[in-house]
Length: 297
Image 1 (tube, rainbow, N blue to C red):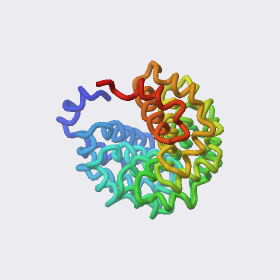
Image 2 (cartoon, one colour):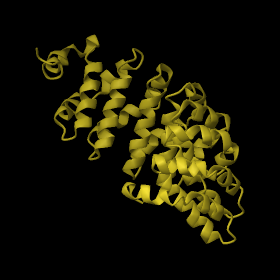
Image 3 (cartoon, rainbow, N blue to C red):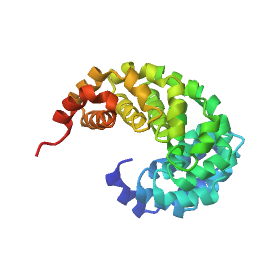
Image 4 (cartoon, rainbow, N blue to C red):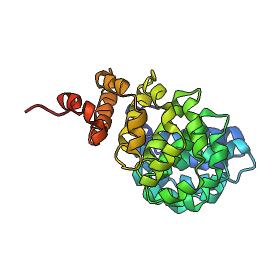
């Protein structure tokens, strides 16, 4: 479904009819209706039309379906809707979070919902964090990725203390060796978000994350290199974690990333090195950095 075709689709007001098919007598029709709603929900106008058609009330009922495939698939439109900030209040008002948490495939929806403060609080209140260890061990790469995204998104909000109590940090760090780049990227993202908080930074260090740093900075994946630089820069902010960074940081590799072919990696490397350079122990590279990072008058 393309953005250019959305006005024509919405002009015929299909959402109410599609929603009525969620109660069709044939499972294949229900699957197709859910699929259509999920596609429509990608776009802001489509998301609003899906909500206006009262789709969430019907999707919440499908979470109790005797058909496991329907239960799983019903979480997808919710996750797509949660991408849009304007949709989150409607989701929070209708969806049974305790039921969603019991469905492992709902992790995509929960991760997107946790991007907002209210959504994050609802996810924690529904006891979703007790399932984290199982989700991070999933045989499905997408589930492992979304679980890391959930942790990273929750770490942005005041839900941070609840996360530290239950996160299996060693398992998260082990995902830095995952066979899928998107999982590695999500794991670094989560660790970087956790490291913004002093107590989170200390736990990230204790979990031996830095032992993987050199390899991650050498990754062929730009997102992995970028978030690895972000992690270095964030850890360098705290006086409790900065010494560990200074002790193991591969400076030559970090410096080489100032000439990376990806602009986001270059920016992240500059920011990280600037944070490192503030410490007296980094005096030997400060002058070199000032020549390359500080704008000349």
